[in-house]
Image (cartoon, rainbow, N blue to C red):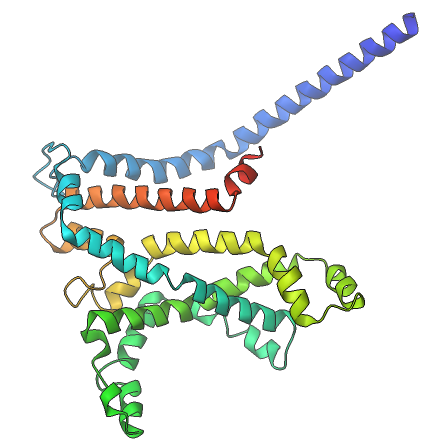
Length: 313
């Protein structure tokens, strides 16, 4: 009995010692990241808090800073412009599946090492490296009234198609969509290629031995195994569509004609720096944009059951 008691006491002491070491390691870990975490929280959190506070004022950046309550929010939500901006963003979001599809095709071609894959591997990501402003100006030149595209259309007797592509809201949105699909292929392809690289080759080898052909392996194995990658891509692409198109819109259309290609993030810039320095109004737009992005992200995570997966429950 004394031996059992000593063993039990020794195990308890060992567990207590291990728990103490674990707590010390956790404290050391938090202390090591605390400086960087504090800087990140300050750089991210302070502007957010200021934006929320200023959204309830008529702040113009210099002289006006009077509390106006919900006036900015009421003006935004009761006007038609805001809903036009949301509609424009939704139109651009509809083509996220196309971006994912082309990125998936590129990734599969590189993964299967088709003829010329080494050369293509070095150039497919180039649109992601080039500044969006430069790409925007490039598309303005290509789709200009006397640009290369219209010159080609006139040369092949398709003059009726040689239009001012950026002069109409509908055709300008088409051009922006083409740019978004083209510029996003590299990122989508890299993401999918990373997912493909994480799949053990033995799985495909076993399926091949069992008699599965390429298309059967693709649709019954590859795509299901990449579901989490596809989910992440969709969430990230939606956030980018809401918050990352400023440079593209600014370089191509400046939100025009009228406001037909304006998005919420571009309108924040216009209200803050172009149309009368309405920084309080712009802050309210920014807060609404943050809420919209959060709602869409939560909905997507709920749909894909990612909330439970990421929370560890």
